[in-house]
Image 1 (tube, rainbow, N blue to C red):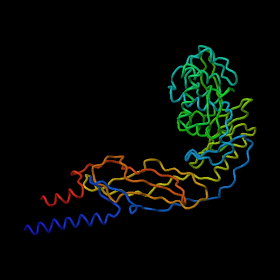
Image 2: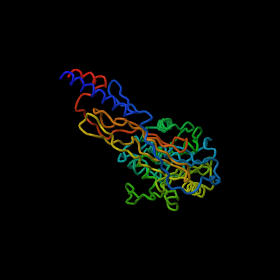
Image 3: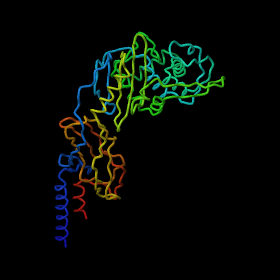
Image 4: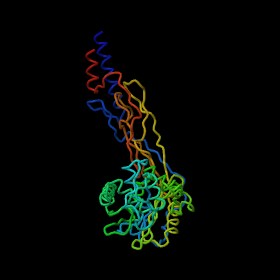
Amino acid sequence: MRYFAFSCRLGAIFLILCLCLSAGAVSLTAAGQTVVTANDLQSFSILPESSVPVSAPPATNAASYALLDPTSGKLLAEKDADTKRPMASTTKIMTALVVLERCDLAQTVIIPPEAVGVEGSSIYLFAGERITVETLLFALMLSSANDAATALALHTAGSIPDFAALMNQKATELGLSNTHFVNPHGLQAEDHYTTARDLATLTAAALQNTTFAEIVATKRYSVPQQGTGASRLFLNHNRLLRNFEGAVGVKTGFTKASGRCLVSAATRDGLTLIAVTLRDPDDWRDHQALLEWGFSQYIAFAPKPMLSPLPVVGGTAPSVAVKPANAIALTLPAQHPEITCTVELPRFLYAGFAGGTQVGRVIYRMGDDLLFETPLLTENGVPATQARLSLWERIRNLFRK
């Protein structure tokens, strides 16, 4: 009987070793954890429907311009995109973002005397008037009201210099290394400047704020005016909202020093593009041309990798589903090389892990270029039915029985 028991233990050891060898890419550490190696790769190719090759972007009259793909953060086309220039009322994109991050829309603002009679575009606020942050934001972004910008800045920070400091703090957070703010409205001032690249990057961040996106996409907004029985009507100055398919915002600007400035954004077939022109006398035409070119040359691609459930050893469930940590969204040339997706996963997992545990990664490449990479996480945890043991502990326990 002892010989038989010893033979059974040897057979069990041999079986465990065979299983480990057959697993190939799955190694075991002292804690019994899985380690991903090259043999675990599952590769497949994805080739979305293509159309035309990328051609040269259209000529513009802008001193500087940028066409940004916010998904990747890359410029699809540009001219002097890193040259510092005045930005006029496109400043208000940052003003709105700072206010939205620090104020409640329903807060009431009592208009101070400093916000009355501000030079340039205005909704003619009067001292002591009570108006909400939300209404002032619509006035700011649709009517480009400089008095609304001043009122919001004073309400948020107490003074114009302190609000400008908040704007510059946010610019630093966003990596806008060639941008500096002095005021909330964009009236000409020394040391108040940006670049086409920075302004596009700022706009991409602002559009992530759903309230900002809703405001800049609004064509008209009406609100009762305190003490008059009448209403204030704000009309969006952005004519692309009315005559360009897919337009979603965002801001116009003009001073004598800056010339015509324009930031626009549009979405078609899942692809969003942001265009910026600085000092462009023909900005409406140029924006339509740039956006049309971008939509004809690039496509949005949101693939779903083939992810089978992972087997689980020693747990309360036989397997666990896995998911990408981040949404997979790619912007590709309409005609491009083959796209390769590589999924790295172990053959199995030992139980005793929590939901959201990283177990692998998914990688997309176009030719030799890395397009996208994100971790793969377990959708839920699987408790162990017994303590997780290393390979040596499992073998040793066989001899102790």
